[in-house]
Image (tube, rainbow, N blue to C red):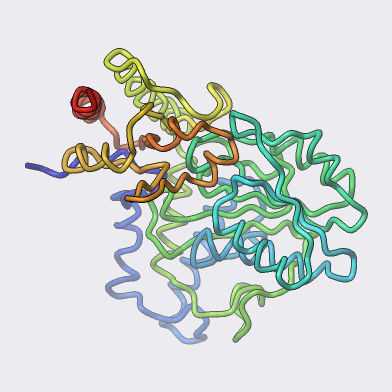
Length: 382
């Protein structure tokens, strides 16, 4: 038996072959420290600056507005803590949502323990934040709004442009976690109107352990990493040159044929959905039908448990669960809870996410394996 069909691109992506080739010299021969003033530091330094231009080009910003990090989690930590600490004299209130990634939620809870006040906005049944709720939550002491661009579980895309307009109107800094959206939909920072935007390399076919944070030049977050002053004094630590080169190349590739990639991922996603709908009756789509990522589909298999489905299909199809079912309880994801998905639906939720490498043959296999497993489980229940 070969490897299972991979449909968990929102979890992580394989490295693009072009990314691996771009990194190779810096794993083999060009080992120098980019901060070194001698010969060995020249090529690594130029490579880091070229990667900065590649990332900036994808986001439509200036290269000096890009800070390289160890990934999306660090980018979110830097953005949120950095603004909270820099603006402490102005206020101590932060607004976020109930469906953020833990790399945002946990940071906000940490700051809450230090005396900051956090408003966790609710979402509707589609996973969308209400602009009215957001405006009502704004206070004179609000210093930051952090709302994700697109949700990692159900794919719902938030109205970031409108949220940024509200933030600007009230003089509030706006951050978005764009780990899931970059490379799938446009993340032009000027169109979005954000002040800070987080990227995770391993979501866009670059290596794990690398990421970036866009910081608009007018914004001055407090330093998050202290040390020798790399990244123009904004993020200390010797640069991960191979990873940064890989991230830069991945961003260049993502900007090369964005419409083609989006069309392909969406076609594969829709083929999967229509195939499963034709085979199974009791499935429900979670998230917004239109305002969602082109590659993401969250499906609830009513009356079944996600972990049991994964056990049945795991050797042939790799996807992720929206609920963890144990002997004495069912742990529903915080996203499905926030969307008020009924328990009998939520506990049987799987997330399928396609990628630019997904093939039609793989989708056909996934439909066949999943539908047969679900039918078998329904039959065994009586």
